[in-house]
Each structure stands twice: as C-alpha cells, then as structure tokens.
Length: 229
Image (cartoon, rainbow, N blue to C red):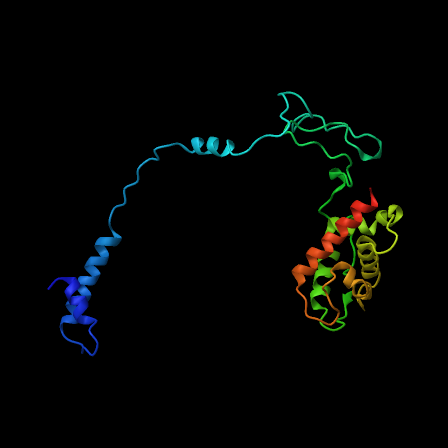
C-alpha cells in the first residue's frame, strides 16, 4: 500500500492501532530521509549585485551637486575652520548638503567617559506612580556625555530661557543627585513641570518610561536650540 493511502487509513476517526503502524513509521522515516538528504543545487545570479546598486542610485537625485575637489577636505585632511561664534567657514563636504551655520557643541569636546570619579548619586522617592519618571531620570543622570556637560554648569551660564528650560531642570537635578550620595531625593522639579514636558502627562497616572524619555530629550533639544539662537 502506498504511503499516502496508509496515512489516510491511519488518520481515519475511530481507528484503532494495528500492526501496520510499525510499517507506516518505517515508510515515514524513509520518506523524510529522502527529503532531508536531498542535494540542493545553487545557480549563480543572472545579474551581479552591482547592477542592483546602480538601479537604486537612479532613484535619488543629488541636490546642488558640487564638482569634484570642491568643498571641505575629506576625512583624513585638515578639519574645517570655525569662525567666531562657532560658525563653520566651509560650505559643505561635497555631498550637496550645506554645512551647519553654527556648531552648538564641538564634537572634539564630547567624551563618552566620566570627567572625574563620582560617588553613586542619590536615589529617588516614588511620589505615586512616578517609577516611569524615576527610571528615565536615573538613566539620563548616569549618561556620561550629558552629565559631564551639565555638571560643568556651562549651560546655565549662557541660558537665555525666560521660563521653563528642560536643560536647567536636568542640570539642577544632576547636581543635587551627586551632592546627596547615599540619600534619596524627591524629583519635584520634574513633577512640577510635567505638563510642560508633555501636555498629556498627568501626575499620579501610570505613564510610559520610553515616551517620557522621548519628550524629555525633545524638550532638552528645544531648550538648547532656542537658547543659542
């Protein structure tokens, strides 16, 4: 009996086990072996991958193309000159995208390591469903590039925000956290300005930590851009 007929017979409702089941198992094992050990033949592609890259390039249009050799020096050359006020003297690097008119924070000053050794900062009290806020603020507090900049108090010396400033709030918290090592503090400044960080957030509600992080970073960016305009 072919294997297909044996399977149909074995799958009939109400069928009892029989001596033929052993033979069915052997047939299934033999069939599976043929399939699994079957040799797969691969053929080379009819068109090379470079053709696909060229077709993808044709989808995009370069704005303001520049002749070769013009613009800023390539990587490995001299860095672009910076005028007073942080403005770049170079107009671009040859890719058609203009260089930024002002550098808010030079890349060479950015450090992924701590500027000095600090003791572990303060913990945070949960003021009622504020675990989303506490966890986010703690992560930002122990992000070395951000903490190094805010602990230098450089931002507040040049801040022109008249009212709410997310960077000032963050700086005050980080300074207070490292000044109270071993203790726990209340993140009241974030709670007070919670509606300014995100208008739909409500104190006492269970909010999402990732959403709060995104709104906090956006608020810090807005404070940085408006303060340096």
